[in-house]
Length: 363
Image (cartoon, rainbow, N blue to C red; front, top):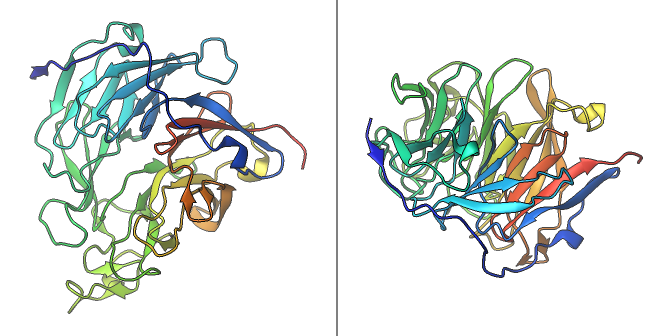
């Protein structure tokens, strides 16, 4: 296995950044939102270490951060840069003391990282032959209940039929034994497993330039390995692609579990397994809508609650709103993750912040 050397530095300070829109963010009655950390520049994917370190990936900045809340007050005490100079290291996963970090064409691993935050180890390459295109090349990572590492390979385009892309794959922790999990997936940047039945749920971003209101972005559920979800032939379960849909039938592909609206850009998705939220929230999924970039009027820019009913997606309702002021962007949620105290953390790569949502009781 090849070892690569990266330029690793400890962050002593970060540049001044705009203040997060905390005062404008709205949560349901009985919940409270606070700032877990600011000045986490370009904060994207998140993963917990075994010793309570919150690792945060980035896209444009090429950095990976480590955040600690050692005094337990619900706010990070220190932010350290444990790696930089990486190629869109959005996705993170933690297993057996090692942090796995995605890049466009590779996955690297930092061994025993939590004991070496002030002196990070060299990155060890796990795989170095992933599809090498920047377009939809930023990759989410997660270990599944089967111990496999799951990795999306997004379509390198708005719309195209490119071999060996538009899929989710899985592999052993050492990069061996690759298998296809799902096909016809344009661009998934978030997934999780329903704790009730073990099925994989993933977000998928719909294609552009079919109008302001078409097609919907999606949440999908994998019922069998190798299932096909339609891209590039059929979108949102019923819309034929004008270039690639001729001669196809949408009935041949798996329909979305939930339609979220056009261009809302769903990214991180996690199930709530804690006990601090009210009982009706437990087992539900939360999804971050990063928000539209080319719609006449902006859409998305929220964290949504997806009620789970008998293993299926039920009502989708707002959980955190206020990232827009009219058409002015104040923040863009990216990922969600549950903390050990039962609160929910949300990363925001526009406001360079991580928020903490907890239930404080009463309606």
